Amino acid sequence: MIEADDSGADERLRRIEAVTDSALSRLDVEDLLDELLARVCGLLGVDTAAILLLDKHAQQLVSTATKGLEEEVRQGFRIGVGRGFAGRIARDKRPVALERVTPAEVVSPVLHDKGVRSMLGVPMFAGSDLVGVLHVGTLTPRRFGADDIQLLQLVADRASLASQARLGNIDRTAALALQRSLLPARLPEAAGVDMAARYVPGHHTGVGGDWYDVFSLPSGWLGIVVGDVSGHGLPAAVVMGRLRSALRAYALECDDPADALSRLDRKIQHFEAGKLATVLYALVSPDRTQLRISLAGHLPPMMAQPRRRVGAMSLPIDLPLGTGRPKPRRSTVVDFPPGALLVCYTDGLIERRDELIDVGLERLRSAVRTGPAETVCASVMAALCVEQPLDDVALLALRRQPASR
Image (cartoon, helix red, strand yellow):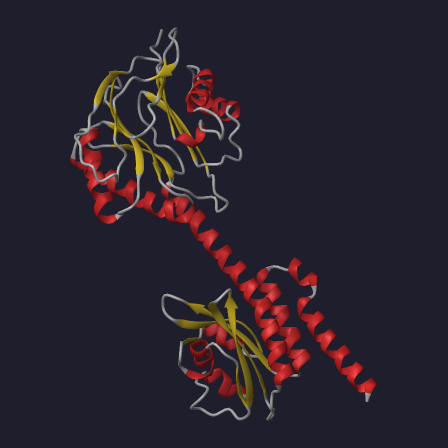
């Protein structure tokens, strides 16, 4: 009798080790889920296994990984929470065992076509949140016991971790695609000026709320934008995309940067309540001799001119966008002589922990020299060491072509 107990304990230990094997962690998420399902089929002696992940917005379970039911994944099978076998598990958030499968309890046509006779399913959790359902089935009648439920729940817990990693990878991929769609892949060509830009995210997702933009207007003016939305990661990037599009639309309707920023401020207060943004919006005249600049809480750009000291431009700085305190905004017209260089940036470029912002501004001023915009951007990024910043960094340099000799 003791030998039988020892044998049973050894078998339980073997089963647990099979699904908690550290080697599984070295697999890609899809391969890990596939291997887990293969192992659970062998350990439980079942013919089918499936993972359905919860689509929170639709409140549906989506077939994501299977063994013996591959057609479900190919068909993109979905079932609402509360409907059918898997939906019942998701609704009640507890295991369900069916010794005899009936059409009333199982609605997947693939399960019926396969001839599944008995099933066991358990919920998948991330913390206290339901993330999906794991179920197994047999082609012959079977009564599942407490040990079977315990083992399947252990597999579900391991699969939940992998599934969350998978969703995280999908979110990061979507976030990066969003960021790339919002930042210019290539700056436009504009007569009389040359331009260069850099963007470095300060968040592990690779996206953030800082942006730069350059666009030509029908009037011949050239629009220059550098902005910074409060927050980090994908939420800030989404708001940034909305502001970028809105400002472009307002730029077509008004030739005063202050007017465009006033409209953008109203847009934020109404549609993006609680968000703040700082924005520099400048217009370069068609003949490139003048700049019209308005600052909404944004740091003033640096100006470099041949044979003159580099320095921050002396411009009025109005309130950031979204403060809810409407005040008149101002635009300033400044000369833009041949060979002059305008350097616009966000605060992530110069701010450091335990350091006054003036120190960072001086570091930037020392790094800026007149010359080609691309050379200036490269020099500034190298001098300010922003390969892995604590905050997002956007940098845009624009130089008026020197006078021909």
